[in-house]
Amino acid sequence: MVLQLKLRKVGNSVGLVLPKEALALLNAGEGDDLYLTDAPEGGFRLTPNAPDFASKMQIANDLSRQYRNALTELAK
Image (cartoon, rainbow, N blue to C red; front, top):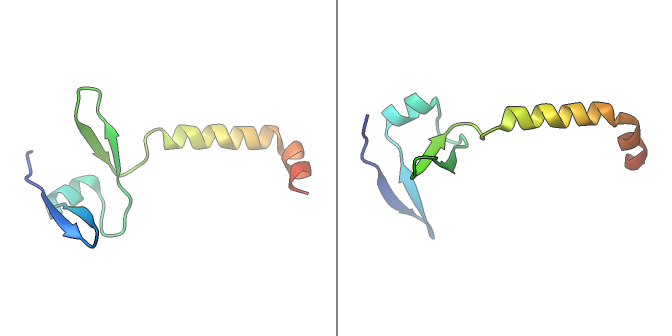
C-alpha cells in the first residue's frame, strides 16, 4: 500500500495528515501517540507503540522487585 501524505502548517509547526486507511492500519486515532524510528533498510518506520517498550518495562519491574527494600529506604 502506498499513500500520499500531506504536510500542513499547524501554528508554528508542521503536521502530517494521515488518511483514515493509515489510521486503521495503525489502530490509532486522534490524540494517540505514534513513534517514528529509523528503519534498518533506510527511511523511517511509524508505529503505534514504543519500540522495545514492553521488554524495558519488564526489566524495570524485575529490578524494582529485586531492590524493593533499598528503594523503600531511599524514598524516605
